[in-house]
Amino acid sequence: QVQLVESGGGLVQAGGSLRLSCAASGSIFSINAMGWYRQAPGKQRELVAVFTSGGTTTYLDSVKGRFTISRDNAKNTVYLQMNSLKPEDTAVYYCNVNIKIPGGPMTIYWGQGTQVTVSL
Image (tube, rainbow, N blue to C red):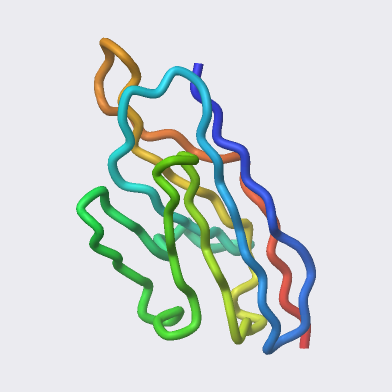
C-alpha cells in the first residue's frame, strides 16, 4: 500500500556530484522522519543523513559539508545532494521513511536501493 521509489544513482568520478531522490506514494496519512542509509560491500548499513518532520537534519560525520538532505513534503519526496564524492562513498544507498497509513501505526519503509559508484 506504500511504495518508495528511488532514483539518481550511478557512476561518477571522484569530485563529482549526484542527486538521489526517493518518492513515497500510496495510502499515506502522515510522514515523520525521512532519511538515507548506505551499505558498502562487507560493511554494515549506516545512517548517512536524516531530516525530521520538525526540520532537524543530522549527518554522518564523513559526509558533513559535502552532502545535503532536503525534503518536499508536498511531493512526499526526500533528496540527497552529494557533492565532492569520494571513492569511499561507493555503496548502495537506501531511503528510509517513517510513514503512518490511515488507521495504522507509524511504520518504517525502505526504498529498493540505488547503487552509487565513485571512481578515481
